[in-house]
Length: 298
Image 1: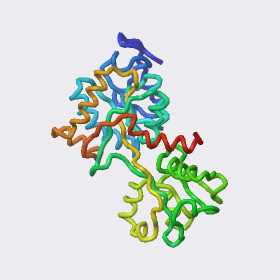
Image 2 (image 1 turned 135 degrees about the vertical axis):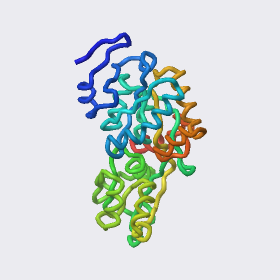
Image 3 (image 1 turned 120 degrees about the vertical axis):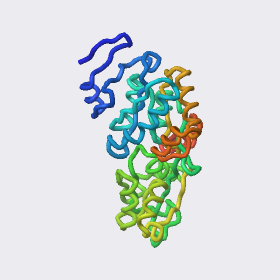
Image 4 (image 1 turned 90 degrees about the horizontal axis):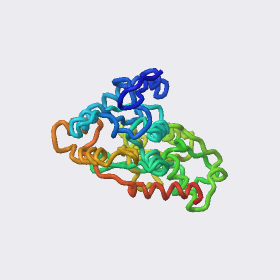
């Protein structure tokens, strides 16, 4: 079902619910086409890291801040996957998204999406990949794990898959024959726990997850060793469609880079757990792109 307006075709909540599996605030999304230039609502796709309700509450202060600073109305729409966000960027049903490193690089490479800025906390604006083993295992590098079991997280993770595979590719090692068993844990926390509990000999995880779990479980630092660390992977990057009007992306970038300068902006930063936003462009993904090419044998 759909209705027509002077600004284009507006799909009803029923259609959007079928696509996004949730009812967004306001309930409407404009159909594909030159997005924000033909309407006064800017749609930002986000991936819930917790419940949809908690995610919307987390990002609402940021949407309110951008609305105030740009004169447009910003809405955050949770979606089931980063691939879903990319598909909706491609169709023009949304204007931008907030991405992890792997999906951000994918959107830039496949759609020409434009990265604007990413959050920074404590002077850090991303995360690193760790290859971890047990200290009592006697492993000093990933090459020592020949014939052993190893856990990745998923195929579309920078720290949990691309990084360890690139390490092996550098030594011309095929992971499918190198390890006795290579499995996908699904979550960084699970991959770490399997090594800690002697269910796997090694794993690839995010440094942020390692640090968080180490605070709650003293065994993490006491029993696990980090034998490889990756470079920095940008995280939480705000990207827009390449077709987005330059005045819009310019206004959004200006607002984000100045967000720590007023009280409303600082409140929005606290809500998402950041200190400020820093400028980001496609060159910030050059390291990850290099690793991806190594894993693809290119």
